[in-house]
Image (cartoon, rainbow, N blue to C red):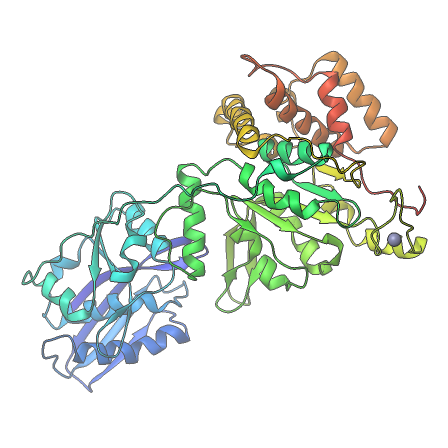
Length: 512
Ligand SMILES: [Zn+2]
């Protein structure tokens, strides 16, 4: 007698439907699993066999076969356990077949039939919803996470016997009610009001947050680069609908703490420069997302950028360009989303004091060149804002604008971008491609602005791509600082001049 149950496999942050077919017939008692199951699922055989013995009913010794379809995709999560056990119980006619028709099953079984959480619950729940399932049964500890998915009935299950009783109609489990959301996190981080006399740095983080741009701050130690970075996160607008679900799915996969509410605040990641390329970009076995993916929808701050291994900085070119990373293995490839904003900081030279008004730089010209050459042109080319920070002239305390006021301006600028970009699929100015005709229609510029842009590009020998980056930044400045109904306002020479001042590479030679 053949029975079917359903669960899902994980492919990056996407799930795909797995049909579990079970068959039981006379023969040598045992359990065989086929369908490209990896080692972890092979062990499921033992867990399922033992759990069946504790299901609360007598299971007669038979030859049992489980097939996991589709056979061409690998399955490596213990979350498949529950669906295998239930499919077998249907074969043994302990649970009715029709009870499994619109039911997704997800959870790892203990030897005694207790159900344990498996990572990726939210991804599986989202897959169930997309595939048209109405109900998902998960371990109780994962129920809040599964319930983040709209339009899905969630059954919180303690162990196999209680699920069997539910499916037999003996003791129905009531649908799980999620403890009410604390979706919105209070913004209580450090405030921009603390940052004294760093006008260029302050403007740079505001423009970065408003237009979705990448930012590199350079300057001697102690001028407040890290201080600004810590405050930049609080300026980013909250995540919207699908974006919030996608970010939460990623964090569900990392499994450190199952998410109980949707991520509304953009994540912030600050890996140390000793991070491995697998840690930064993703990898390991089974493959896990790296810092670039954990920063998806938020901010990745890399302090001391030239100190990162070359494999790390070069590997970031793919996610910076495509918004995702691929992890290629001998027999499969995985993709994780990685659309983050890069914020980086660096000293101008190894000792840190190149160009300092009072301290002397002790580095040789060759060592300065080697240090700065660690950042490749293609990487720098993907950073719109490159801003020098200098030691403050006076230490007097002047009241500075607070984060809440700056954030209000940023929200207005983002709303203008959404309106202008409309159905193009781009979420902010930084996503407008620098090649093709999009620039002309989406970043309109007046004659004075255009001639200044050409002038600047010629004087600095900018590539067409770098020139277009400057134009996108100028567009963000328009969105931020033009008042009134200026959705269709175009870039003028003033914005071009400011955008020019927000892209200054570090000086190459000592003493220049
Ligand atoms: Zn130096």
